[in-house]
Image (tube, rainbow, N blue to C red; front, side, top):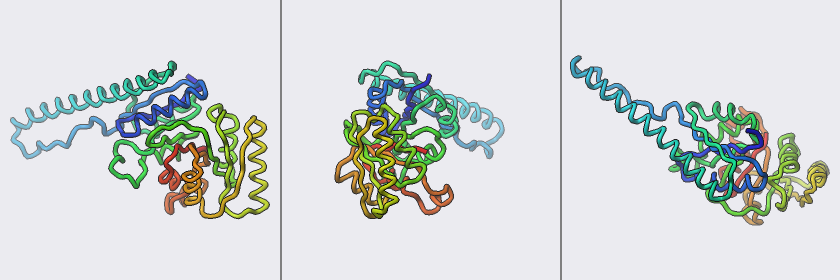
Length: 284
């Protein structure tokens, strides 16, 4: 299936939001939705073997019992995964989406997404997964891995869905920022939305030229965008702008610095995902 959105669903508090955002994106674009639930290698895995110090006769019986418990656990994990997918399908169907597929896969989440995303237009994921619900100040580790590895735009759903009217493109003049502009220009998802392109920094001739180029690219696609320059550091100025204006969505290039540098000191991308309360679309 091509022209589809891959929506990753799990048992986290973001699952409903992922489905709601996927439904909205499908309505905007006419794309199909592929719901994907991934069972990690540890899901359903058995506990450690504690039978080593038990007499041989009892040890055999205990190993058999542990094996049966492992099998039961694996069946429950599969049943839960199917239930999550069926609940997600029901949410999309209630929103009027008809082109829906569901996939239950085992394996590493990044490897699985890489296998499935070839025919997709976008990967949609919640900001935090099940294991991160308790850690409000931290991103889900899987989210960061997906954003770094995916070749498709990654749509990071906010905690709750709300109708979207205004979108902000964060533009720093780099290649990934221009790809973000190009993504908005050629993607039906952003039609009928008010688009603004903002650069954070000094109002230099270079910055103004970059914004003019971005505005022209969008105009060629029939999008009349506003442009502007705000002072400050991107990590704080963009989040403040999104909250105060307010914008309903942020589009930006992902991880403009080198991988090593961003891993060591963090990056604008990671900080924006962490601090913004609106959906963020990240392009590579």
